[in-house]
Image (cartoon, rainbow, N blue to C red; front, side, top):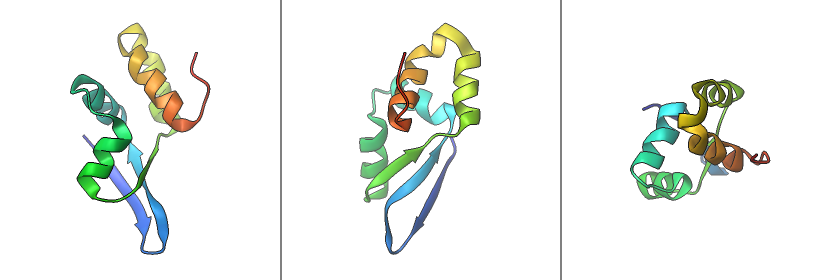
Length: 80
């Protein structure tokens, strides 16, 4: 699981770069993505999901459709 935190002392919320495994792990363990990051980092967080991650989730097919829906909602894109 890889998460890269991009934050500075005067910019809140902190942006967390989220990969496919991070999203799948949170779903598998029934952890709300944003709430889990906030509990771990003790700071306000905003998940950043790249186009590459979205493409990977789309390629993985029906098995990962829930992860794709979560990613689209967190990105502000309309879920199908």
